[in-house]
Length: 365
Image (tube, rainbow, N blue to C red; front, side, top):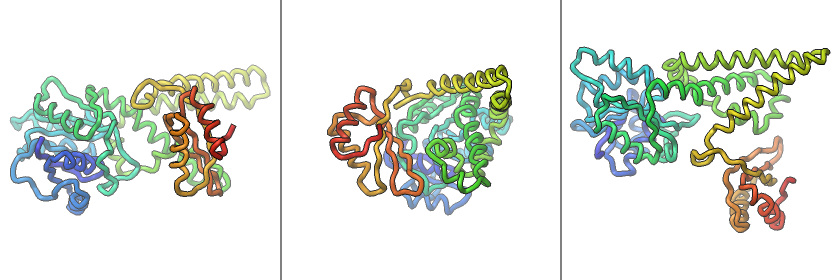
């Protein structure tokens, strides 16, 4: 891959362009808003000048609803040797593209739908980074008709972006992202919506749990309308199943209010069943580096909100010979302090705790 055209200079398109330019690929940027293309170019993502001839690969980074027409237009104009899209929905755009190309004498051999499983709550070229996809799954959805050159160029793109290629059927991909991305976003928004008119006293009690649940609700609603409009069926099916669970949980909680011992026991059993199913599902979420989940011990340290505090903790952990597997920070309400949870292997927890205390840190028992 020596040349590429990125159509759509948003977060994903600009991030991919930054990765390619860092590998020496000449990248041309195009967007329906010329200012976005110019902004991406000013960040070092390429040039907003049109290519003089066909490029090696055209990367279409537009919302799912516009993928098919954008790809069809690029193919009709002969802009590249291969055509990839990076939208978060795959089945619908491919079927629409087939319809658009029917009778034109063109086929889908040079086209391959892809989806980098990475993003941010913020959108636009200014949010882009060249390392956005590093270590993240990047789904490829080839069919038996996909040309080898298109597949090889897609694999090269994934490699340049330092992502991990995963091959899936397009419709299986859409069902999967409905489960692990689209439905969770709506659930996060539903929970966050409960806070909109909540009492200020209640909101001030927000801790790490509610922050974790509502973090992704900060995303751009317009972007998510585009995504959900392209994958409504699988998401609706999952929400219907979730609704059934909610109805059963409400019934169980009402039963816990009963004065009848049998009803309370039945209610407790219903809630416990849901919680245990949640435990079982949570253990299937991949752990560090995509490996099987590991159980870590948490060493909780009180820190003040001052420069260098985290650096000191990490340096002291290194001196203790203990690797920090993960870290979480919970900020104290109304105070310039917080708790850092250092996730370590169980055998290292006591060693780290003792070492940090010897170095003056307040470690919570």
